[in-house]
Amino acid sequence: MVKECFLLVFSDLDGTLIDHETYTWDDAQEALARLRDMDAGLVLASSKTASEVVAIRTALAQEAWPAIVENGAGLLPPFAADAPASSEYERIRLVLSDMPADLRQHFRGFGDLGTAELCQITGLDTVAAQRAQQRSFSEPGLWFGSKDAKIRFLATLREQGISAQQGGRFLTLSFGRNKADQMRDIIGTYQPRYTVALGDAPNDIAMLEHADFGIIVTNPHGPPLPRLIREDQGRVTRTQVAGPVGWNRALLDLIDRLDLN
Ligand SMILES: [Mg+2]
Image (cartoon, rainbow, N blue to C red):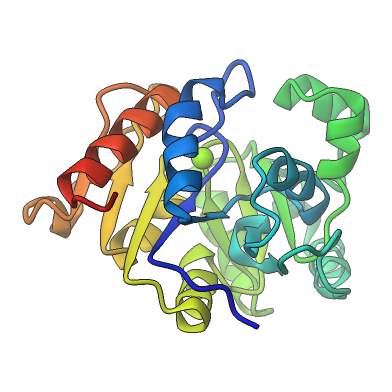
C-alpha cells in the first residue's frame, strides 16, 4: 500500500539539513515538527550510504518514506534496514584498478582510504566512517590532480559507463543515476500534490529544478551555485543563512506562503 501524501519534501543532508560543522539538525526542529503535523513526507537525498542514512532516517522518524542514497545511485526502501544488494560498487573499483596509473594516482576514493584517514578528512567518528565505507553503488573521493588530468580521468570512466558528480566535498563516481532520477520515480509512486527540494551543492541542482519549489541552502564552504532559470519565476529561492537554520526558515516560510497548513 502506498502512503498518501499532500506535500513531499526532498532534502539533501550535509550542508543542508545537517550543519557542516556540528553534524546536527537541531536548528530545523520547528519545521520538522510542522511537517510531521501536516503529515508531509520527508525523503532524505544524500551522498551518504544506506547504512548511514538508515540511522538518520530513524532519528527523524521518517522510516515510512524511501531515502535516496549514494547521490542517487541507490534507494533505501521504506522501513528497510539496508539497500538491496548490488555489484555496482565492485565494478567501479575494478574500472579504477584497470586505469592507467598516471590518471589513477590523482583520485583517492573511500575504498583507498583507511578508516582513520577518512575520519580525519570528514570529521566523522570511527563508527560513522565505517558506515560511510559500506558502499553498494558509488565511490566518492578526492581529486588531487590538475584540471587537465581530471578531464582525461573522467573521459576514461565515461568509456566504461561511469559518470561523476561533484558534491560539496567529494567527486562521486557511479553508473549514472542521480538524485533527480530517483526523485522522479518516488514522485511517480506517491503522486504528491506539491514537491519541495532543498540542497546546497551542484549535485542537488537537478533535484532543485525538478521540484515544484526548490530551495538553495547557502553553503559558505563552497562556491555559490549558478543562478538557476526558475529563480526568476520565484520557483527556486536561496536562503540567507546556511545549514539547518536556513532550512528551517525557508521551509516554514514556504508552508505559510502556500498556505499548506
Ligand atoms: Mg550537501
